[in-house]
Image (cartoon, rainbow, N blue to C red; front, side, top):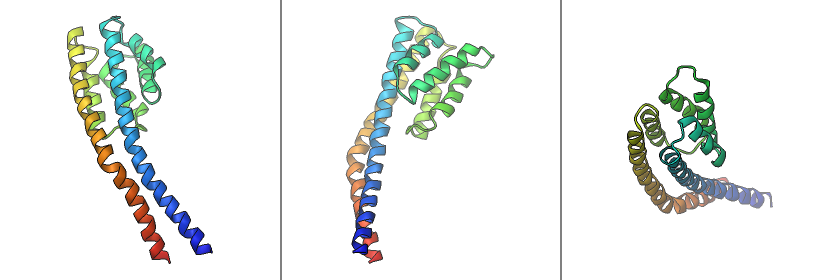
Length: 172
């Protein structure tokens, strides 16, 4: 009886690990979509309301969930301090502080960091062009993430169950 209960626990845990891996893929894709939405909102704040960046970041911080709401809130606060640091430096510091728990990959964070280098010191048209280029790259990242979900989600779940069955056979 004890072996059966132990075996069931192992199977449930391994299936849960597989489902968690599949869930991480979904979370990654969701965060990329949220980032896209945030940057469209930022572009609108800059282009149509002609808001200064601290004000635009504040508007985004109030409307976005974590981790991007925290990121833009931190940007607003740090730019408000006016301690001589440039926007690019503040952008990267806030990224490393606010987005460290996000599911964005290293390459995606590097691209986002390069976006921060193009904001703040260029004229309005160049800033908007930089954002458009980044949004195109982000759309490609979203498509790749969606393809990855389709191809790997079933694999993760199957490997979780198969790994559990393997462990049960080994232990029995």
